[in-house]
Length: 382
View 1 (tube, rainbow, N blue to C red):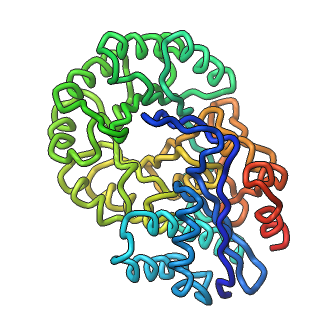
View 2 (cartoon, helix red, strand yellow):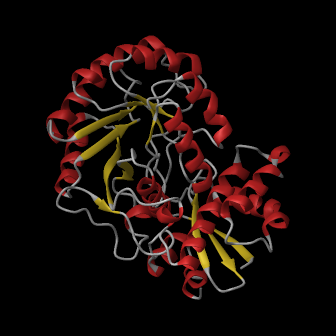
């Protein structure tokens, strides 16, 4: 079964805020779907955390390497793409685009074998997993309203990040955390993401340690991205001194970038993003390394329904991965899958057991968010 065609479709019109210094607008494109077609008529879908114009350029660069390749060998094919592009963007746009190709090829392999991806990764440790609703921080009244709405939907775990946190005052930081804890109650998990990968993040080790102590007093489950993404030495110090787990790694790509961080003991929780890191193949290798170095693997998932579907399959294949990230209120997560997502009475999300990623994308939602019929037609005709 050969790769015949790969197409990219940017998502626009409903792009959620990202919390960034230069805030996203609804028509900005930062998430792109990738559809791989084979000569046997099968198609798979992937997702890339990169603007579509960059993905289109990457696909033109990669086409001589992937055209005609075996679509049933995602790990080998994508390693070929990595190995032949060291000089043209290692770790950047090309790696991000390979992520989407890899996810789509795993989707195809699952469909061709009649198995969910998690089983192809070695087996399913669980049939459901707890999603944590991921939201941007706001002033306490507005944040509380959003958290209560998500709790009413059935969520029992929450992460809040970015916004004014670490950017205004220590007093406001604590007021936000206090209000959030009071809103969700002591029986729900609460995590905090400082957003240290924001442009020109200025807080350093002493702020992070002081803030970690405050968060621990409110029973926060982990402190994410408290430092600049390149501050390896400070992360190591913070992990050794902080009274709660330290999480990070969403901006790193390819397994080689994670190795020095894991070897140094910088993270309690490592968070590769499947739509950036190199896809399912790379994320699986990072997860194995995390196990060896004593860190938990919990995927970063501020992306799309396709990224969430990949994370669910990965969560099924690792015994210690009992949480996945779920963006609260993003149409690219809620609208794209046919039938949507449903939490059970325990606030858990079923891991799809159908072949491949296990989801079907809604044609009307695809048309609405990609601006045409092409993506829906490619998947419908497969």
